[in-house]
Length: 196
Length: 294
Image 1 (spheres, one colour):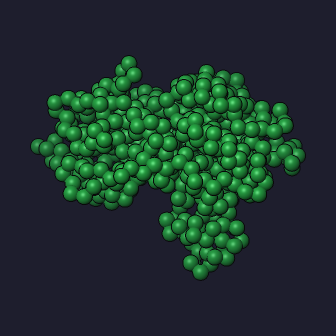
Image 2 (tube, one colour; image 1 turned 90 degrees about the vertical axis):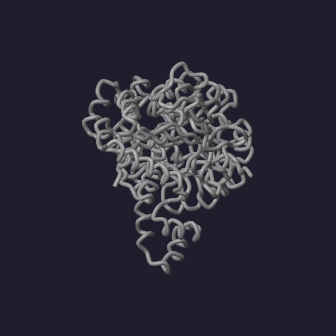
């Protein structure tokens, strides 16, 4: 069985843990760098990206997280996690973990009062996904290797590049585990691949 | 079809703040210090609770200029306080685009009988509670987040501890009740029956519950997390300390790693003196903020 970590510095950690467990994988909350060695995949949860970045710096997580991705271990970022994965962020001098070739805008839909939920068509899924957007970012442009999985009013809100997956919305706030299950499958396949 | 202001969107916003620290600030400069230190949100105020206590008189919603200044200064969410039952203060804050409204007993209540009908707003609310009765009534009115009341502006954690233990103890009691006992429990608590049933079925409150009202040190913040708080509000504790920048950072770290005592010891070193505290028994009954709210 695959073991998936949830970066537990701040944010909606518990919800991801439950969703991972419902999707048939082991879940661990990652608060220390050394824990990265024990997991096959990692979820960067929703929360405040500024706060997470400060704590990432504080505990020397930045390089180990980059290395985790460079070893082709899968990472799934939701909302703040998407921002952490992007190579370029509008209005900010430098990116964070910078593993996905995309340019993102923070709070792109507006403040909390503009936050919303909407049914979303996701590539490869038959039924729409009930997507919850909270002070959400969106992706402005993507590189050639990035596959767009969903758009909302022409804004890119879900994407995949190799072992990296991201959504601007919060699948963890719903009971719909399809995206987590998809990620668990990515992790299991990659685990087999990396074992060869 | 796009829906705004749904329960999921409003409660979800508070879920994203979990494990974090929300700091009271009175200007843009303090807001930047808070953001830099790792706050998940700031509460824009005219005065921090200990100054409200010292100043006496009527405490009202902050001057919109201050709220706007803070909103322009940081990219993290901005909260602001409205008086209990003050429909217009709440609507004004909503129209300004603040991300969360605290219907707060720290301000002088505008209504001594009724709270706001918080379901009617697109903006989410946070409300204080001392026990499950208050918590369930506020949830019934539509609050999307709870916090303990504690005793604001005292730097004394004792009341916040009392309140979180009371709420969580009553939740445990409710969860273990048989269903036919819930109606009488609802009657005793003055709590909406349906809200209690929902809590019983899910085994937990339907909204996050932060600690507030007396957090003055990193160890206080960690204590409240150990007692089951989802996160921490720090009012006077940061900007009334000797070194706000260091205090803010230390409280953020102690909240994240609330069970790592070596780390808490490390972050608590050399950060200067905490705010001067107040013994609760020295506060006259009519000056206790926690008794406001119905």
